[in-house]
Image (tube, rainbow, N blue to C red; front, top):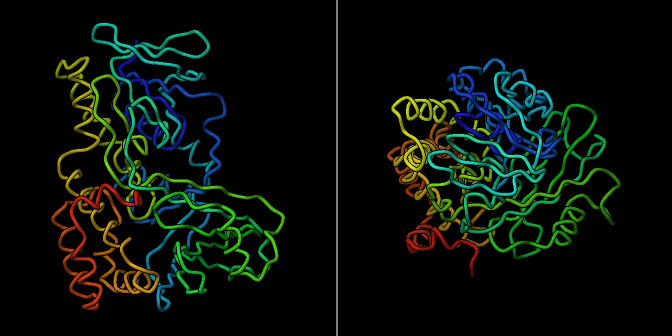
Length: 391
């Protein structure tokens, strides 16, 4: 019998399991063998880790740190805020909860048994816990359907560092106009510091973009006739829109709970920041005698407290407004955004920033926009925040 069973083997699952174990909860991680070997490229602003009690340990998990970040809108910007890429293997080892149990199997279903939950495993076994938390990512089915605003698609290539990317550089976004029209896409690239680089063409949120189009644009940017031979990264992220449907059977955490930022597509830092808070809330609820549906509801409220839900609505609206712009408008949009004081745009890029601060940043940003863009953004209807990319 466990206090909490966490389904998933990614960073969010391990972060929450580790925090639960640290809160003296009997935690178990349920995931297929090998699920802790992550193929994705995980990045974070370095200062987003500062609220974690193990910030020094997390910084030791960073494979590459770029003190300056390049962003290109209508003009080029150098952002003096450190950004980093995780070493996935080191991060997994750091997050793995020594005091949590581990079950290596797939989950085929979950059911109630009085005040407890029973995970049914594909191999025929069962795991019994007071609480089940789904941390399997945005494609989760345990927590029910979630209506995302749209999909961000990217296609990248890992290549030898042969001048394709400037040594020691990291480009978060390059919106250079190549004359190729809709849909707008941008270049994301980095010198990995290990003799390789990553170049990636990324779409805005909307209907899924054909990877062949992204490949063509990536080749055009670099003067290639075809993608060079090398490791290819395929990315598809559900972004924005409604939060997962609440239910009383299973709670959710990380991307499965909608922690993907509606504007940036990032979620790992948000999950790392939230894990200790959510684990303490679970421990408090169990300590107060909550079980069954009441425990699940308390966990949902901890994952998405009311202020964070208000912030999410503002982020969704901001995304909807941005997607009403053409490429020239998007370029000017980001020029104005990163021209704000660093602390202002940095706060906007966190899902746990209080809504009053998000609103203040949005107001300041709106005041800095050209008049033509103000009209376009101000005319965005409120319902657009949940229908981005739906036509």
